[in-house]
Length: 247
Image 1 (cartoon, one colour):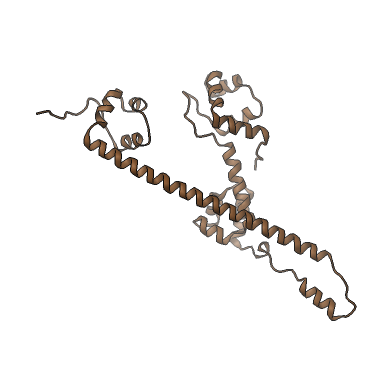
Image 2: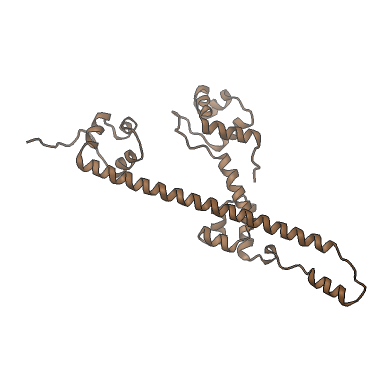
């Protein structure tokens, strides 16, 4: 009878299965677990481990579907907020234009009636609450939606959308866009290179690769390969065309 012996030196844990389910190769896992890739291959060939791996992949796909649905909903909410802010701004401009014109009527009742009809209703900016004021301060400091939610203690995006002036929310979304432009892209990290927003800003400003390589402890060829990655190159071009305004 064949005896299923423990694999040499391998100490499996829950993270091992999760990383494999996420697509990590055997060779990329070997350095972390101190075994040969063939050892990992034999481990994952076990029936019980294969079952765990299938379950982990199903859970991962479910999480990805939920994340996609959440991002779609957030994009829809952002479009609605921007449209509301645009409509409110146009409404405010229209009342300001009407206030400039003050036609006079020959009779005393008619001027009063004209003034009554032209009376400016309360706009959203006239109804600012304490939460709006806190949100405005967070946005002025360069904060995005997360900072706004934390500053107002409204706890969720849905509460913020209901309670906060759309014009303030638009500025928070713009701050988030600036932060994403400065953030290092999601890409496989090259050996020894730890990119950060400063690296992107300095390269966008025209600093040579050799000068940057000295500060980041890598060769200029390593930086060249990193900046050649499609998503990195795209963000670099965006920064070079329209450098985000630092708050």
